[in-house]
Amino acid sequence: MTQSHATPNTNSPETAVETPAAARAALVDTLRERRAPYVQIRHDIHAHPELGFAETRTSTLVAQKLAEWGYEVTTGVGGTGVVGRIRRGTGERAIGLRADMDALPIQENTGLPYASTVAQTMHACGHDGHTATLLAAAHYLATDAAFDGTLNVIFQPAEEGLGGASRMIADGLFERFPCDQVFALHNAPGLPVGHFAVRHGCMLASSDTATITVTGRGAHGAMPQLGCDPIVASASIVMALQSIVARNVEPTRAAVVTVGAIHAGKAGNVIPESATLQLSVRALDSETRDLLESRIRSIAQTQAQSYGATATVEYQAISRPLVNERKATDLAIEAMESLVGQAGLTMMPDAVMGSEDFSWMTEKLPGCYVLLGNGVGSFGGCSVHNPGYDFNDDALPYGAAWFVALVERYLRLD
Image 1 (cartoon, one colour):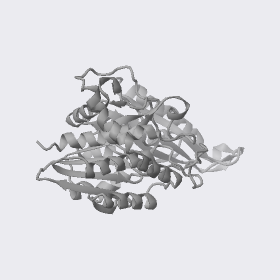
Image 2 (cartoon, one colour):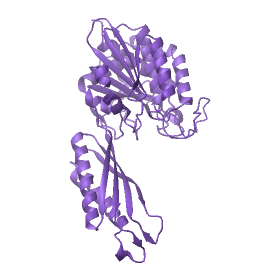
Image 3 (cartoon, rainbow, N blue to C red):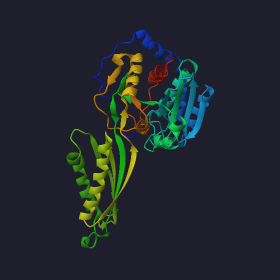
Image 4 (tube, one colour):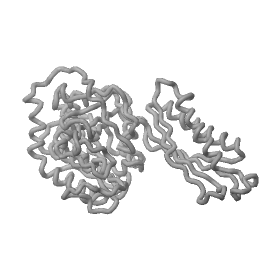
């Protein structure tokens, strides 16, 4: 999950008709009994992490496994992406299951026997676990499941802010591998293993970055009248930006405008030529997102002008609001309840302001993104994007079973 993550509220489960406990446990138990090779794969990927668009070793491993299990494998989709496809029967339905593969530029300090062997690179968000989980499901679906239609398993590069999903889409992902619906999961520290969390509608926020460059005129600090101070103009811009959420965004809508970095000057007695501000911008709907961009551009330029300076704004879309489509979410919930029952499912009352590259896929197709419990306490509850984080292998059978249950329901033989 890109940039930030929050544990969902686990106190609002939605009622549902219970599947008998024995039937619910069967698929999870089967995948738990078979998990050893996928845990080994997960540890291997964890020990050899690769950053976005450099996942050559990981994608090669994924492609080899899929080919062994009978998938039609396509590599190099959107750079280092891999897609495996299996067609069964005569059914026209098609489903897509997605996992991300990239690591983060963080130095690991877990001390695990399979800890990262690459300096300043680690799987601090659990993408190694997501990849192994989808591989476990893909193997079971290829050898043990009965379905009628087309299954596409999508292994995406560069989820962490580099646009891997949009790169795959631009490379013809859904034209080359048509899907009616697409699904993904993400581990959730703080949510117990064996539990899922989801919601209808917007699940995660959009994420954009803005870089504002304020240009003035340099001068000696003792003669400020000869210059045009970009730092003073930048300070005014920072303060004015605070009014966007408070006074421009409808109060019932969520939005975030954060100025996370300011760079200007090198000496206390010199007025610099320019200053740079870096922003993180988030919203839960496209209308609010567009409003934020418009107001940021306007404020930067007009505030700078009022001080005799100029401002340029570079705006980059990292992800869209991630919206869980109702029918796809109903299917996701049905699959989860078939595995863990009502007690293991949390219906999240609110969206999370974190973001996810999978949103580019749900913008194109109906889909659903769910959270998979990674555990509580000092191990499972350690937040993602943390040097002490690790994916919980006990969660793998639940995630794999959910992927399998989705396919068996959507591509059912009848």
